[in-house]
Amino acid sequence: MERQAVLVRMSERWRTLSTTHKVSLVLLVIGAILALYYLGQFARQMNYTTLFTKLDPREAGAIIEQLEGMRIPYILSDGGTTIQVPKNRVDEARIHLATAGTLGGGAGWELFDRSKLGITEFEQQVNYQRALQEELRRTIVQLDGVEAARVHLVLPEKSIFAEAAAPPSASIALKLRPGFELSQSQVRGIVTLVAGSVEGLAPENVHLVDMRGRLLSGDSHQDPTAGVALTNQEIKRNYERRLEQRLQQMLQRIVGPDRVVAMVTADLDFSQQQSVSTIPYGESQVVSEQTIREESEGASTGGVPGTDTNIEGPATYPLAHAMQNESYSREETITNYQVGTRQETVVQPPGELRRLSTSVVVDGNVTPERAEQIRNVVAAALGFNPERGDQIVVVPMAFDTTYQEQLEEELRRAEMLAAERERQQLLLYAAVAGAALLLLLIAVVTALVMSRRRRASPAPEVEDVIPVAVPAADTASSQLSEKQASARELARQKPDEVAQIIKLWLTEK
Image 1 (cartoon, rainbow, N blue to C red):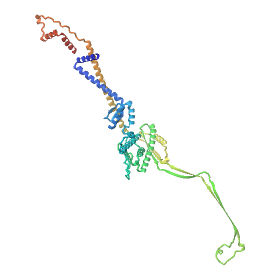
Image 2 (cartoon, one colour):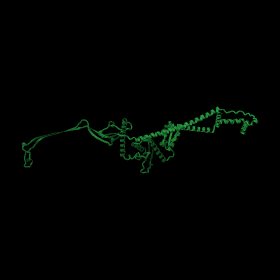
Image 3 (tube, rainbow, N blue to C red):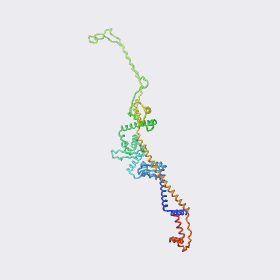
Image 4 (spheres, one colour):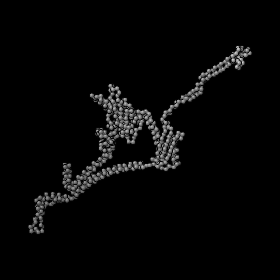
């Protein structure tokens, strides 16, 4: 009954309003509803954060299906390529999507979790290839700097009748993180990983490209010399970069940030050398000793020395007094010594520093004394060796900061535009909310004022009409029109209805 009474009272008040008041009240209610809707959307967006951006429609559909299964609310934007979820559930959503394999990939070895009856050998081979590609993709994505990857394998069908089967091959497309570049060692690591995961796959048949179509693997695996040269260049550049970073950190503390540039060029010897030397060691020892002695005694004939004795002639006989006694003695000693020796083999590893050249450029004017101090500091930090041919050059020179200032100005403008856009959006939401609240307040105040007026001015009471006899002779003083006479006559006949009409007139006024 109370509800019906309230509805009857509201309908009576609605009928008593004028057309202008009715239209104003309807517009106020619509504005309030719109304001509340936009405020709800704004509050909802403030509590949401981006889950993924730049999604493929197929990936977006799979992610939305998973989010609906988890009962996580989401917001689509940028034509369905960006998905936003509540801030307090973004980590949960990412972990669940990564576990389910929804993030840019398909099914791996889980394809074989459920066996199907009647599956053909061709389907089994295709499922094996799909699973292997997905497992390789998941492994490659875990590497530093790799955001996404696609792996395509070509596995020839094995046949016992084919004499020479085609070798398998692989193609890998990588999407790197912004500002990241793969080194040659990382490229070789990915190539080796894929080649070792596929039976019969040679490294030269693995092709690695990025999303911009650049070939990353190259042909270094076909020529071992080229691979060694690339490795040496990478070692050289890494060594120079470490020295440059150390110099930059030290010099920026001295002359200030962004006011010094240091470049180092190192001449490294990558040739491998090996030398073997034998060095005497310890004291000598006698190993063997041999002594030879010779002695002889006896008589000998003698003659007159000279030509006559040696010329043939008549036979002569030695004289008795010419016989002589001779003795011969000789002693020879041979001693063999053993000398201790030590054999040393020295292997010189590749990468020996042969010369170091350093150039330091300082922004602004630098006095010669200051430049000499900087040079001494750099020499001590690098281990300067003049005998090796090292050189250090310190040059004061004004830097050209035009491009840097232009970038900073563009960045500042972009930040200002973003802040202005955000401020305008906030102002728009605030204006809509304020207008809605103002209209709602006006509607409430208007309703209260009208209610108070109706309470303050009670409906006039119409007394009973008492007929008064009018003398016929007084027609000149009270000349009434025919309408007035008919109204009086109606008031006499139907006093209640006339009273209601008068109340209605007073209410409208």
